[in-house]
Picture (cartoon, one colour):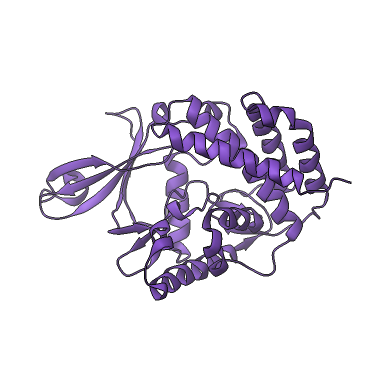
Length: 313
């Protein structure tokens, strides 16, 4: 803290914040009243280190390099995210990278689901909708991270198709109802994928934008966090997830020009992916075991209801 901010910034307390599954997050309070956040990218504390070690394309949302890249991109394009004060990648004292990041005194967007004042709700979610519209209109004819300049050899939804098959295979081994319906789930996946018409333009998306990945400051301004997975991709991937996670409040975020076939495909993909994700957290000792179990159970039920209501011809 002294090296970055000066000798007047003496650490008074450090408290662990509720972080995600891929990095550890702490709040640092100084005796002069200043606060900031410490991000630690310690692979031994990552619940998806197996996927990272295997270089799974769908787990490319981990690491300080990605955080630095995406933070810079969002900032340059006027998309609000906490400021990066300092990033240390030397690893001369510790075997991991870490960063000091702006602390926002506020709440996650999900708190505003139950706010008593509808005018406050309107302001928060309309602002978030405007932010996302602006972010998604950043277009490019290749998908991937902002620094990716190669040529795509396949359409981006094919990546999620392959991922869904892998995640379905994992879930089928651990949940009886998924295992017994694996062929129906797979048939539905192939049918949905077959209806997608190739496209060569992609918008910039967060990649996993639930209400817990939006911080709202005391001026009711939204900021995006957990940004490492952001990339150029089909914006339907984002919107189908927003629809899942924001429920009734998705009405502030929705867009009328989305491809319905892509929306269905990605919606089904999210259910399958979240079944597997919940199971992996459950099996790998995630602290909130009930959350992990509920996540897997809920999306198992969603996936099975999906194929029940879907007429395969």
